[in-house]
Length: 175
Image (tube, rainbow, N blue to C red):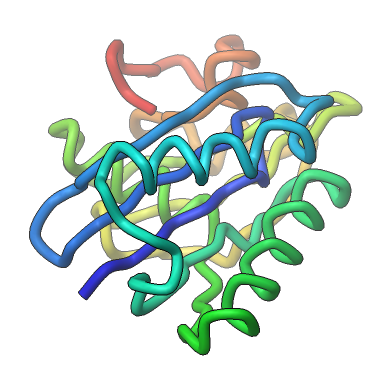
């Protein structure tokens, strides 16, 4: 199994190749206005580093948001095109779920909140029992509107870092 993962739902363009047991290669670069320019070179770099051709990929996983439309569109269309060209199935994954899973791998136990920056003084967010179990549907709100609902535990993600007055427990070294 070779899974190519793409996510452009945040300011970062992230690409990884996984063989079912471990990450073979990965690349990530933060530049919210250059997703279209950065994604293909990142894919080329990851595949090249792993010594794999795109036609060898057996599945494509793409971050499906929530996130800004322009960034999402770049990742989703690229994943769909790769799937059409290679015949590999394409799987959408909630970007917040991916961040939650990464936080769990970094040692965070639940419950916790994942929050990303939605711009316009809002966050995309969801609550998790643990790294694999989402408790709430992804939502977009102003941080002050959800302060009571997220006050009882840690929070991860760029939205948590941006609004520390609401997300008071933001562990170091988390995604």
